[in-house]
Amino acid sequence: MELFGMPIVQVYMVGLIVAGLATLLYILFSDMAEGIGDASPFLDPAVILAFITFVAAGGYILELVTTWGSGIILVIALVTAFVLDLLLYLFVLLPLKSAEVSLAYTDESLMGRVGKVIVPVPIDGFGEIVIESVNGMISKRAVGYENTAIEYGKEVLIIEVRDGTFIVKEYEPFRFK
Figure 1 (tube, helix red, strand yellow):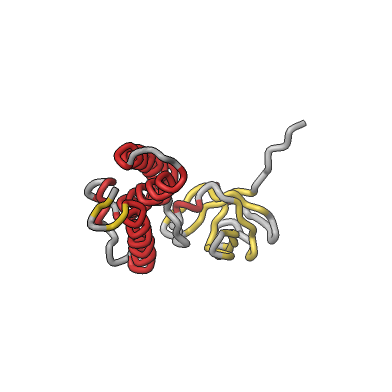
Figure 2: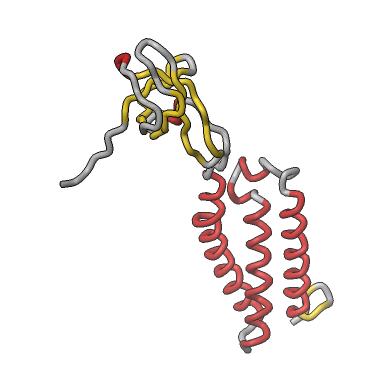
């Protein structure tokens, strides 16, 4: 069978090459196309290019290895590409879009974390703690919970944050007996 004056196998191969090159260009310049897929997931260039690639690859392989008619091969390639594209979107692209990767933090996001006292916290005064995070070591001003003093080197639990000051309590890890 011929399409556009070429054998159907060549049409599939050309489609595969064009979709592959378009995918490569999309990967390189995707920041400029950001937001296109926000209106509908089916308008996302990654989804469209993957669908075209799956159809072309499936059609090409089936044309080479089977003796089925080109119409049946096209239908099988379309259905297979739709299923694979749906799986790609649901299990890869959607989780990637919803994942937030950021090195930024807020003081409130540090509540409940454990830090270490590097400047002793006196009664009615300020000390300093450090918290280990993916960003490195974060140093913060601290006061004792219920005005308690905390010695150097003690582990503390961050209870609350008020005006940039961390209210901390000496950390007592829960131990099973």
